[in-house]
Length: 379
Image 1 (tube, rainbow, N blue to C red):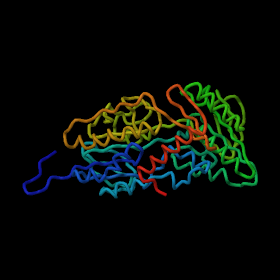
Image 2: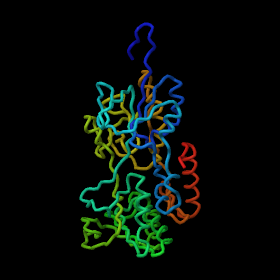
Image 3: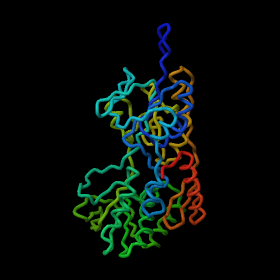
């Protein structure tokens, strides 16, 4: 850092967080510590709220309200003496150490971290209001609202994609439709050979048996190739009618900012970062969660990875402006995740083991509610 003129106090190093995502929560909760240590902290986000992915599908079934599923990130940063800027980043000017927002404002930084989340690809999808991507997370409330419209006739839900998000949406929709006077139908289409592909075989078998046992139609080895006025055509020639189609076909990093700024990105579109979660092209730029490609590779799109990145980002954002050593991030090789099935049960998966039942749900509920309490979930 440059020396200050005689008699003038040294400028406070500026830490900027672009996006209030899961990987930034650890730092946001410690904003007061940073300001006491002499840093200025700024959060940039289009919304004052973060919707927690771990509880989102529970909003579909009504286990949680949308308000129970959100964290007031503006309150976290401002309560610690930092500032909140409502807006979206358009480009990064690394040579000037400034972020330019979509409205033209510039936000200077000495160290910046990106946690912009991810989106669901919507290529070749009609804009007729009948197809809704599972991301952003807050779409869960809209899925529930759509399923409850016109309660005098059965509703048809089509879930495209059989990964964790798609299976959870289908299960929670079934729970909601069980309470709907006219009921409804759920179909799940997955182009791979299995639901929860990449999970251990017991988990794949269990989730299919569960969904089919609840009345869902499950089509694997099948791809939806077109949508037209409430009918989806599959690669096998089937026509699947729907009132609402939910796209859960995988997620991609929100990499537009990085590409526009000339920053290297990985195959998934995320900011290419090294072992310290630092851009390979600029040592003052960091990132976490779905917005990054770790050493050029995509990590599993699970919140547990983003949350574990939090302490590393917190340390490194302070270390760089002070010229101190950075820490490395070491992704966990084994991790637990639990699917909420909407009926008071869950499917827990750890390494090569899976089990389904009420104990799994109780474990998930405990972990999620403790997490929300830690970060002051907004009711």
